[in-house]
Image (cartoon, rainbow, N blue to C red; front, side, top):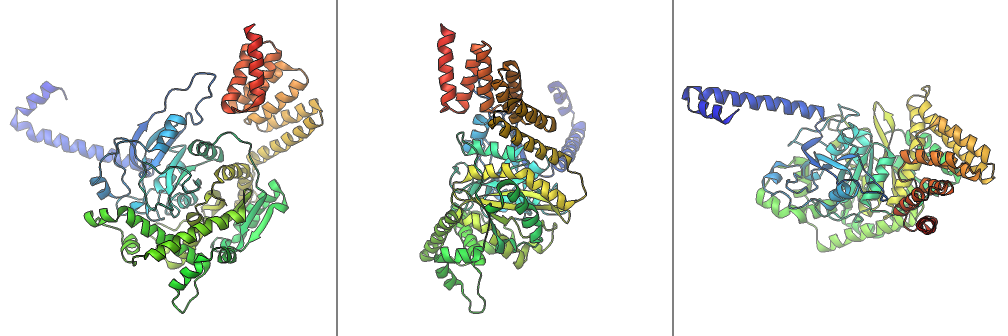
Length: 601
């Protein structure tokens, strides 16, 4: 409305009610639009915002690794000028906007080149694993709309599952990333506790909190992980041990055969050989390796029931969560006295305070658990357990509050939470029309290795799980990818035997089956170089780099081809790009230096 017209209307008292009426109508219209927007985004977002990345660096520097990817952050991460809500309106009311943005968010935007588009819903105080909260409508689970999305970072998982963003950040304390990932059918990674700074993030339980992230595919999960963890380039490693926790697998109410034999075991045997498979009884292992549990058990014994090791560990996790939450926020709760969900209130306020001796024993258990997992897995082992004991419970059902469900869920979730080890939730199809997942755990600090393992196993896991869901269904896409890999391996063998033309033929077959894999073009280029077919080699490397801008071998091989074709400046650029990606690459350094001398003469 123009200022003059506004003044004219304001001067006419008779029209005052018209103005008020228009204002009310406008509010109603905005409200209707807002409700529609919430439905469209599955209720995932609590607030929309926009953090844009800086411009791309000029050559020869490599482009940002997460360019063109969008992401969301759980409403625990600080963004300058915004109040982090912590899943409770009273928290927003009593806190000021953040003075700076969380370093991990800034790293993804400024260092990774990704775009942050909003904050997502979390459970009340990020304390539970249901995804339901009385303060906000629960986000709708895109994979099973009548079932809970899981929490605490429900909105982040839903945003990824609904294809609203490419990835999302969350905090995993007692399952805050792993649970909603499993229930919404996406990948969810819990990093090793303490390996990424928690600065600029509202703490829940300081010794249990770990930054995590969600993605729909293993490549995005891995790329995001490399940025967050600030990992230098290194060759991928395959696991030498896939250890199935037989007793923990039976904590799942989903048939064990559905998870272990028909999916994980088949995939592991195919990729790593039967000798890589091992079996372990974790109850007995932890009982032997975590001696401080005996002292804890004596304090918990009630004389009529022997608590299992897994239940004792679950209780340790819950006590640590409660104790450290109150250390962080007890004063605020006493001052503000916010309305709290009865289930959370009973955990926080109705359990007795811990003595210094009891706290010391809990910390001893946590340290011994980390050592025990490290001793079991070493540098090359993966532990396999269910993520959760069942498919996601229905909205409003009492299942999630039942003692049996809580005991099973906490027993599964406490392994990584207490030990601080990294864990990834991997979707493996459906059961009863709901998502099913399995979890892989690596030792503390084995995050890169775990990301590599997921990327290596993911396609095979999906193939085997799809055959279970519908044995008669056609799996052409996955079968073609598998066939392409077989052709590539045959090509590699021919290359080793110096059968260059045969290798080219096999790599060409792989490309026909899957033309979106840059490695196939790069490998064929290597064979063309051996035959002095430099134009073909250059073209294949260029194609490889359009598919994968971080393919170091493609830069090196194209540089070699261009050098032989007399394109020295372009060759120098290729070797320089390779050095940016891998600064210690001697071949790239020597080639670039040699060519500069030739080019500058």
